[in-house]
Image (cartoon, rainbow, N blue to C red; front, side, top):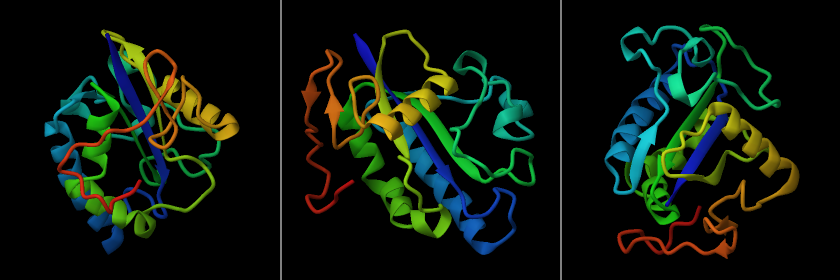
Length: 188
């Protein structure tokens, strides 16, 4: 059986430690969205520091255990210190594409997506990538970065794809079949 890996990456307009109101709004919004995502049907796991009690410093400084050493795409050119880091990245596992779609495009995460350009820079790079892993495989941050960079350079393929151009675990193209609770006028 396969699981779906999802890596997301975005460059923020301001560092994570910026005291401004937009950064505070982003933190509040992302906390609520993250709580809902973790409770969503189909969610399996998300990369978290191995020592959650000692999660000081930047993403680069954390011990991510089996999720591997943190890294960022080559196009990220902002800071890497606690005061200058201006990015958000996630790495998670899902049972299937439809569950991930429903989690991303409904509830608090959908509300946050509607505000993304208040917080994130607009650029020509993809913000997420999917790929299938065998059950029991934990993807690494490097896997996510490599696949996101491949998606940017070459477009969707069975080992690096998007909601719009998705692939089944077999490598054949597939289409989403979102849940019934998804509003018909919402598009990724």
